[in-house]
Image (cartoon, rainbow, N blue to C red; front, side, top):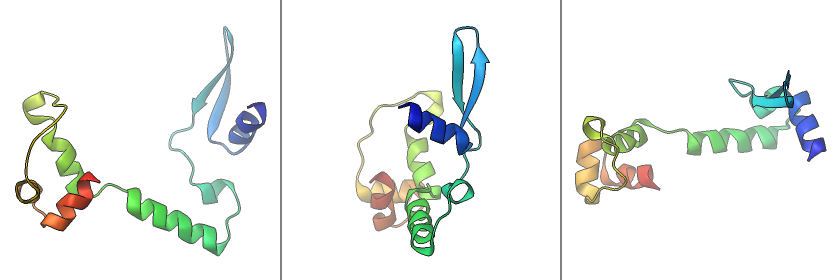
Length: 101
């Protein structure tokens, strides 16, 4: 575990600061991209780009998340159809399905 923390501090992902009870670790904001910290070859850059593309929320995803907080009340579930969801977020049904996966 010490090796991992040392690596993350050296990579600039974690910040080490002294505290009253010892060393305090906190994340650096914004978190650096892997290519800013480690040397990546073309294959690794492509894999990183693919991950970012798949996991960056789009406007449909944000709209789906917004459905769970209507009028300031946080809901834990909603019941709808794929078609109604698509209309609510202004997307086609396939895009609506992808937003909730």
